[in-house]
Length: 239
Image (cartoon, rainbow, N blue to C red):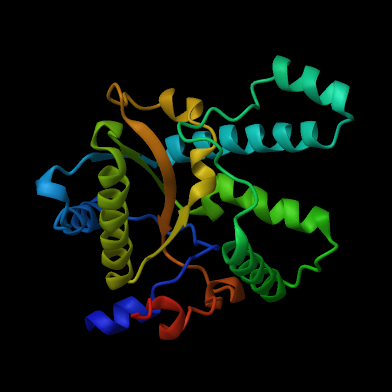
């Protein structure tokens, strides 16, 4: 594709087919992502990539944690405290808090994006059960055959997050260019321990987020593209 076509056609895919992603294609995507710039070429990031049975097992473990955590949240406060202490469902993310209310305009944009997605999915705002079920799909990677987990070295401080973001964008665009799709998922950073069971993650590296990757399924949810801000919102006026 032309670059502008890749840029405009990339979107978050939330329904993947079961078509296998060949290792050779995945390797090409990763090599292309490695062309990304980073601060003094430090490249302070690493990826853990789950495919096949590892991907399925990890998805079930993360889903189980989400379901247990969701159940705890619905309990009365005393039971909630006891359940939180005695369960393995408490978030063990490297960056806290992972989720919560966003400040000001960012919460407004977040809400509008969520409502737009639910509208495409046919989920009513008051239908909490359907919303919970849709949220749960994050943890099985929307049935994608590849789950990627992004780690950074905190010794590089804020530049590590900046460099990781640039590399992640390159990875998503390279994937789109090959006719596949992705969904970057902050939710996949909530529980780290299931990932540690499957990968020898280097000491000091911290989990940032995850990414689902695969071939998009024919599904209306994959047509959703939230509205971007206009230039007048992007640009800071001069004095």
